[in-house]
Length: 574
Ligand code: F6R
Image (cartoon, rainbow, N blue to C red; front, top):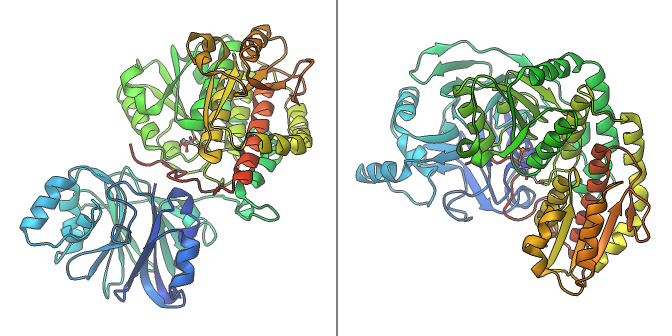
């Protein structure tokens, strides 16, 4: 959460260039935005980057500048709380991603020293901490003094470099010609360079236009390795689509095909290695959050169908529920590769000797770099905050893994069927009109359809702003059925041969529910037909119906589909 970008360049650059780079990180938070330059200019405001861009002079130049797009943690969404923050003199300007845990103690100390703190944020304290000090020396003190998570960029009025500090929050340096760019992730500079240095925890750096020096938290110089990365930016344009969400939904057959090809070729060795790790582990635990957790639940189902026992835990509760030892294999699933709860879980498991595998979308992300083995889902950048194509590719990767263990899938047919599912779009649009004013929607499924029920409900909540519950069909009669009355919509996911979910569907119909049937078996009343295949293919195809339904409901309601309120794509705080 929160995106930061800094540029330090030999030649003056326009601030517009910096803000363009920042825009590529907007998915990390979008409630306020700002920048600061070596000339001492600080501009910030609440709202989205595109509106901010119309209000500020983007033509002004600088040789050093930093910027920030915010997802509020400490302090409300106000102009004063927006970043950058400055010290009392205005000479020190900082941007911060993370949370300072001992901010009360720090604030009291700084106030006693006479600093005037004007915002409600923890981040402002960082600027005051460095006020009047030798910044390099103060970086060492900062690591000693400050508890919490941080990626911080600091510049000085008239200064020629950026100071960058990192602990737990992601930070990467992109090395371009006569220019260095520091950002929360490679998207900040992937249009300018394919050379990057990734900060590890407890490191800081002094970065000039053609130089960089890295230090450990004690201030000792350290060697860093420049990595070349591959990243396609072709998917970043919205093209003919009104929203990234629908573009990303429509892209699914293409990115699925790309992943399958890669699993058959360049990622083949790695997936075979992961299969071996699974076969040799005593215990397998998936860990993930949100949509990625739903993919993990499907992973446990596919492994179960392959005769392998596994469990899935939500990352924020991992430490309280996981039993981990050196014969445990953790499989972390994360689109961003930066979800703080997943990172914490991995670190906790690692301390007990567990092996770590991960499945991520963003290459070189923290989770990938913390893993013993990591596979990429190759979905390309996902700009809409809600995960769609990345969920599908996570599931395809898991299906592919389990096909090596015995749970067979016809992948070519799956991709063909994914394309054909769009033929039902007009019918989905009609249904969206009917459902748009509903207060609650229930989604039920059993076995592999249960994680899908949860995933569809999550999409309905975050994008269509309709309260939805995705649940096991069998659990319904243990309480929730009390809420079913005339006209309440219940989406029922009915894979071939599942007689029990048909009974559950009848139970809600008998109480007046308006059922919407998504089914792969011939039934009298089917709203959306899914071609037959294994459970994995039913999961992917039925979920695609749910994705489109969510999109068209939100469109009917005129909601901010790509950037729903209060959310951010990369959740880098606990
Ligand atoms: C929902 C959504 C979130 C993420 C969750 C985990 O559409 O996108 O629920 O799935 O925040 O994020 P990653 O996968 O980046 O770890």
